[in-house]
Image 1 (tube, one colour):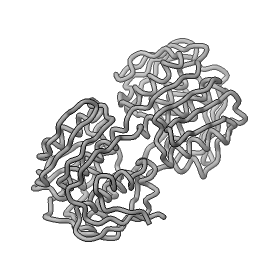
Image 2: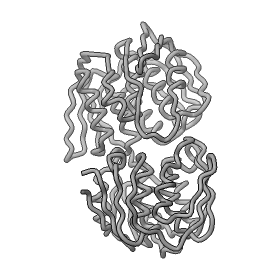
Image 3: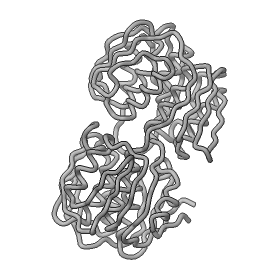
Image 4: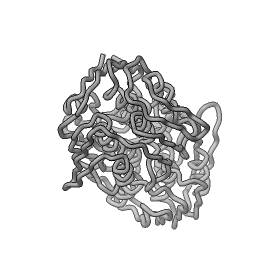
Amino acid sequence: MNKLEISKSSNLKGNVRISGSKNAVLPIIAATILTKEICSIQDVPNLTDVNNMQDILINIGVKVNWKKDDKILEINALDIESTDMTYEDLAQKMRASILMLGPMLTREGHAKISLPGGCVIGSRPIDLHIKGLTALGAKINKKYGYIEAYADKLIGTKIYLDFPSVGATENIMMAAVKAEGKTIIENAAIEPEIVDLANFLLKMGANIKGAGTDTIVIRGVSDLHGVKYKIIPDRIEAGTFMIAAAITGGDITIENIILDHINPIIAKLEECNVKIDILDNKIRVKSDGEIKAADITTLPFPGFPTDMQAPFTALMSIAEGTSVIVETIFENRFMHVDELVKMGADAKVEGRSCIVVGVDKLTGANVSASDLRAGIALLLAALCAEGDTTINNISHIERGYEEVVEKFVAVGANIKKC
């Protein structure tokens, strides 16, 4: 069952509850090995990436109890039997496996991990991860498809990131919380997922200041303890259902959101003639189907998120006018465009930009998801396309969207997995 079949689905209506954030829960799962006490993580989404992280923990001897019906993940890292995580079948499935490097190095003084995989959306070098950990005192070798790191002791220092990498910021934070002395991360990422990881570590007993700004100061502590913690809502899933309402001329109320996390998406959709009512812990998104073209440039938070670029491109394919979409984060994140063109879109990629001329209608086609966000963009396009669409390789979509079929069916989409 690796395909979706979708028929035109006008005027989606209803309520959707947003799941816990994929990009927040994965580093927090990695951080649980920093304590020998039990951690209980709440609102954990049932995603293949989370399953893969769970398997990595189990393979190194950590006890994991995932109560999927309750969305609770209990992790007991009292004993770690191995620091070797070079099982390529897991690591190569997702980028987040690299986040085990910092906490394992801090906990055990050694870590060996396969070079990570994930979506093929461009070059995502781990140089900044290595730079930060090396500055803290680690010795790191990269060869034969894996990374091996050693550290007798980590010592706090000042680290400047050439780019505000989310993953590097997270790895350095997790390594520094028990390092000796003070660590300062300059030009740090400020995404909400960074703040969520910091809040989790603070609850464990870490000393962190400045998360959510470009300078994070961490003073090492000797011990961390187990905690209960609830993951923030997934801002990209929220944005996806906002576009679903817009592209189908629908009326969807989206629950369990943090408004500050989705303000860039709200602002852009309002520019596109989509009406958004802000309610308590939820928003109502209404569209008459008359979408106006708008330009976007993806940027680190609080700019327009790169993860929303592909869904927004799908929306612009039926907008009135011409849109210019500029991708500044990943150089190969327009792989969905050729598939949208198969559906009748008028779009052309030129370097890091895509020119989209809105068309009157899209038509169903047999298309394939090249990556997570490309896949969901094709799903959104299929909802407004005349006829039937088949999307292949939906395992990409299932990496980042919990119960994707069930949630879309609940608001009236004609979609099934087959």
